[in-house]
Length: 345
Image (cartoon, rainbow, N blue to C red; front, top):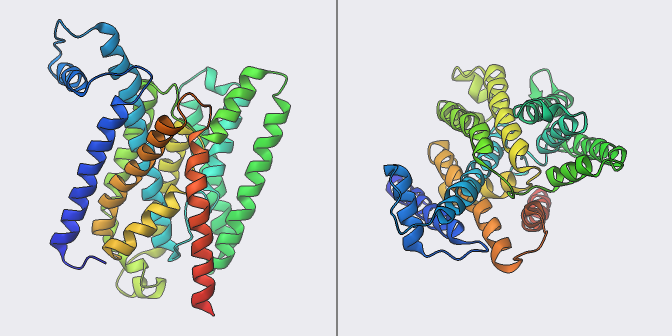
């Protein structure tokens, strides 16, 4: 674990630099090979609003309209899931808490699927994010109410309720998918959302996710001290003046909005909210002053890396991004379960 504030700041700076490098690599990666100098020229031209004559319009379109939105969405979606995992692990003082484990991600997916199945997504681009937010909020509220009694939250019950609600959400999604098989276009969209991915993402999707994630992150910065105190226990937080009930409610609303926005754009991407904050907590310690910006970059790095892995090793395949993150995250989840059992014994 890093001890001094300077080394922690340097580590966060290293994460930021790594993110920029991976983002540039992701922009370079694609069916059409473009040199790095061309990409940098196009990006500079966009900022200056002056495209050089030797740059072709199709080259500009590939970078600006196809690859750049994809990278930005991967950044915000990955950051959102990692930040929400950090908040849930801090609030409930359990390394196993995450949006996917507590049923938040599956609830958001169910909301998005309902919007698709009943055709609400045809009327407004905000229909899917709105229904995803509602689905995530309802799922988390049910899980939290089941696990809470007289202001106390039973962590074991919380995790088990999350697993149960996730199973119900998946069953409901499967039911809607089965009912929509007669309409292949709807069924294909539902399958896409449940598996997760970045294909076909445009600036419209960027403008959906960007304001919610940015405002959510800014609001979370005001709660870093409250999260530190919650790690010491509810009674301790209450004794030093933290309104635990109100703080938890606000953090849950922020987390729900961020997960809903993320799932509404990229679909069901699992386990980033579990793995990233846990690893960074081991490196940086429990202080959320450092963990919040670290998870911002760490989540973005993880999702961009997963997308790069698909592009490099499974080029042209139809393997969804959610399969890669689940394939990496599920073994880590089992490792945490085994580690907890050993510590208890």
